[in-house]
Length: 424
Image (cartoon, rainbow, N blue to C red; front, side, top):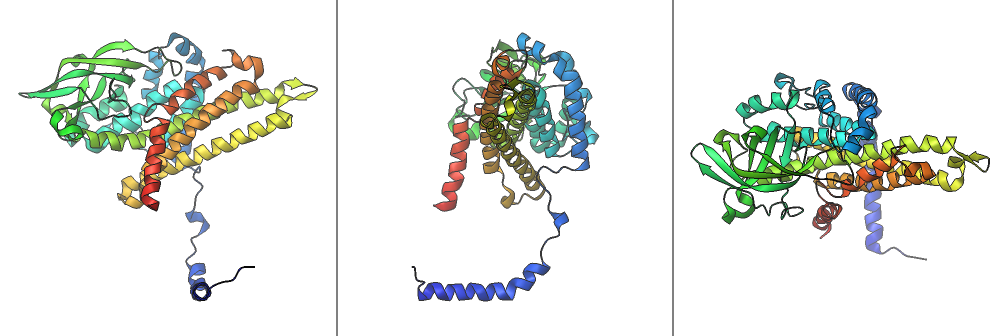
């Protein structure tokens, strides 16, 4: 038996009094059911976009997935089609050639594309959630008028931050920029740059004053014809159709008006942009997991052994159920982070800060993508190990989720810091 102290009893009575006197207000202030919506319930516009992207991916992308993967090259017609479908300017204002849709709309599109080909998905993701967003949030009105219509309608963008010595330690940059009259002259190199082979617009982060450390980092916009050099196109395990390149800048001259956000503010741009970019990667990994699941599970109910579909054996049925739970959990984390991001942008209220939620979504979705795509191969047995089903491609593509836009350990470190701040 346990006993309550007098203090505990007094506190309990006080709580009962508060509850008794507050009960009516609790009832009368209860929000209507219509005020609450499931995280995966979309607006009419978002749902229409989802259906449109599903059709586009099935009809235009799916027939070319294997060829693009084996050639390790994005089909130019796919890039053109993404622009024609309005999928490269989702959040850009209609006045500047975009769709003027929500951030969640972009996340929905990224997810749906990844169900068919994560390579195409990440091209759309980086262009929308990172490159376009830098211009929308930090560029001057004049710069927006110049660049956003191009990015919405025809020119692919690339975000150039990582370097040989600046990966997870993103601000250990060696690329330098110096002022020369009305131009900035950039020298250095970048690694692991997504979209670089096809891109025509490049956001380049360089240090204008090494003595200031990260406060010397500045963002510039350049075009390929200014002299951006593709030094090497990487040969990768997965997302092979998505280009990943080494870039060199040898006395690259950029007009002074191409500086974005102000001198020394590049670090601020990079930190804030990568937070929302991680939600995009979470959506990519979520779509990948769902795509592998959708392709493998029907096979388990067609393939029979010992007189019954293999998917109905308890051992496999439980694995399938667990995978469905994992995907749903990743989906809710991703959509929650996306909605928080939208609320933060609308209100600038710290209570809607989404940094921790973005890290959680990316970490969880990348883990789920690896587990589900790996399990999907096993569910299909020998045929799953062949290229014929495409399941092995999902598994190869999944590995990058734990690496780019912040490794899994970086995500865990970010989450841990929030927990320490809350409880210490």
